[in-house]
Amino acid sequence: MPQPPPNHPPGPAIDEEDILQAMREVPGYLDITPQDFRQVYGRAYAHALQRLRRGRPAEQIMTREVAAVAADAPLVEAARIMAQRRVSGLPVLQNGRVVGVLSEKDFLGAMGAQGGRHFMEVVARCLTQGACLAAPLRAALAGELMSSPAVTVGPRRSTTEIAEIMRSKDINRVPVVDGQGRLLGIVSRADLLRAGGPA
Amino acid sequence: MSYWAKMRGSSQSPPGVGLAEVLWSWLGAFLGIAAVALLNQYWLAGTDLLLIIGSFGASAVLIYGAVKSPLAQPRNLMGGHLISAVIGVACYQWLGQVPWLAAAVAVATAIAAMHASKTLHPPGGASALIAVIGSPQIHALGFFYVLVPVGLGAAVMLAVALLVNNLAPQRRYPEFWL
Image (tube, each protein chain N blue to C red):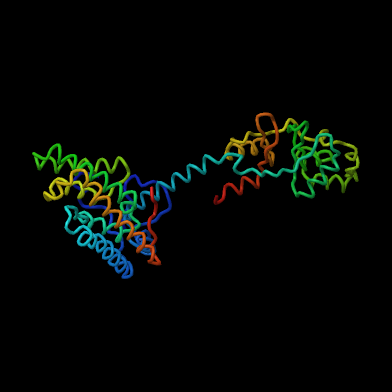
């Protein structure tokens, strides 16, 4: 088997026979040697890896049609929007600016879950103490329960940085805002997963 | 890699082509050269002009035989021939009294200019050389050599390449224009 050339860039292990076979499958005369092809391919592969590691800007992968709620909206309205849009969190807006994020975690906290604010904590409290009613939340407003200030990013922040923000702050979505704090979109963990796959 | 080891080569020849490719190459070259040669023989008969020069045989190899090659694309075919022809005529007129020097400067400069303009087309080197070592008939054309035979002949060959190569189901031409 032919050996890779020196300084062969990282890439999938293809040998010259693979390349020759592929060249035979392309109709017409290809004006390139297998080794030239492998060198180009290996370098292109390395560039693609580098590009993926750098990440893409938030504006390229964000969800643009964002469900949001006004700070003075009743919590029940926020809950309905979350249910309808099947999302677990909403940016909260005041005068067109993102002032916080309201998520399932905030609801769980208000319903008796402590610390980890996990749904099963609510269930456990409910089963042992019967204190599981969401009723105290009935009169509350979105702006009272939200987590604030909102953790937001600008449209040029990279997916790599956003993933790090989500990890360190333990959050699942990051609103994307312009210089005035106006909502442009939102990047969720699902958006990041999609962006990491084949573009 | 050491100087001597480089001479051993390190890759292998690309695969050969099938019979259909061979036949389409033959047909394209036949029609392309026939068009130029017929025009040369009948249309330009009795004039001091000519339309066919040796470098077109080399162009035919590329534009009918290696249609995907970057060297065979219209930019390279036309640009390479025209630029090289200008350089060839200029070298003959300035250095023609020292024939070996004129020939060498013409071809070397043609290659450099084709590289610089991204129009590398090997037959361009021949067009530059023919301007220097060609017949008295060629020399008499002066810079008109750039237009006829070089520019017009290459354009006729290009037209045939567009018409014939795209008839072949497995071929398409060009890969790019500019």
